[in-house]
Amino acid sequence: MALSPAVAPLRTTPAQSTTASAAAIRVLVADDSAVVRGLVARWIGEAGFELVGTASNGRIALEMMAKHDPDVVLLDIEMPELDGTTALPRMLAMSPSVQVVMMSTLTTRNADISLKCLALGAVDYIAKPESSRGVTTSDTFRADLIERVRVFGSARARSRRPAPAGTPAAPVPASAAHLAPAAPRPATPFTLRPKVRNRIQPRALLIGSSTGGPRAVGEMLEKIGAAALRRLPVLIVQHMPPIFTAVFAEHLSTRTGLQAAEGKAEERVEPGRIYVAPGGRHMGLAAGPGGPIIKLTDGPPVNFCRPAVDVLFKDAAVVFGAATATVILTGMGSDGTNGARALTDAGGPVLAQDEATSTVWGMPGSVARAGLAEAVLPLPELASAVRALITGQPV
Image (cartoon, rainbow, N blue to C red; front, side, top):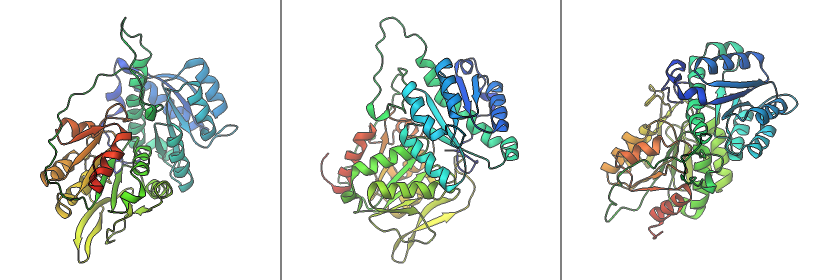
């Protein structure tokens, strides 16, 4: 997700994003701030993308969508006449494959609205600096925004190109109707890791995710079911800024019926509870007198991220060893790969989300290509596989 180097990978700069293919990506900017519209419009042009227009409210944005069919819409939440939350479903009804990235400032209310927008079909959100000066001076906000336009726009732009004669259209899974690009894409080769024989019953479920993760995590945990999840603690690292992680935990509590909250320093890890890494802090584990406890640190970003998946996974490999069940879900970058290696070396199973149902097949793809996943499955099938690991019952 987005806001600072402590939250999201910073892999490109606007100059690096300027390629021949970038020009094919059409972008619409909708924000009630003239300053934000002007800056973002300039950045879009400097990155080599095609700016199809700017809009000061959702009504104007919908009119521009009908005329220009953009690949990416950067959509502010709070706008007059028609706000982003109301405009979003109308945009998706008009163009189901359009990639909508929500923009909002860091408040609890906006975090809650942003997560609800992801459930409605937005592909991601980006947190805006609170002031116009912050928007103007934040290189990180600019780089994160351009990165998202490049990632989401490139696939959608490819879908508009005529396919070669006789090429069948690739089906889009129902679970990814607004998440997966409509363009056909070849499967990325990988090798599965052999399943562990005589595996140990898991004593912890570990989840790492980033872009597209809030929706994927919620769906998976809900389908695993509270009965299975009550058997062990669930520890989650989702790349998110502060405030958003607390709201994300509340959403998970509502979906699962279990107690979910940001992890607290020195807190004992107990079965039946969900612990979410707080935004801006690494969450790890340590051995405590009564069992494993949460460890929070403010160390430097790992893989450009804080919280980082690798931090939790490496600690879990030491504290829980083979008694883990680990899942890598959709997300940009490769955070989690080194931690997954430590977990598999300790004897624990690692599962990854497949490419077709991932919003971005960065993190799970990195684990799969490294040969660390014993299964690479569509999101709906991951829940059954994880439930089988937890309960010891066949799928």
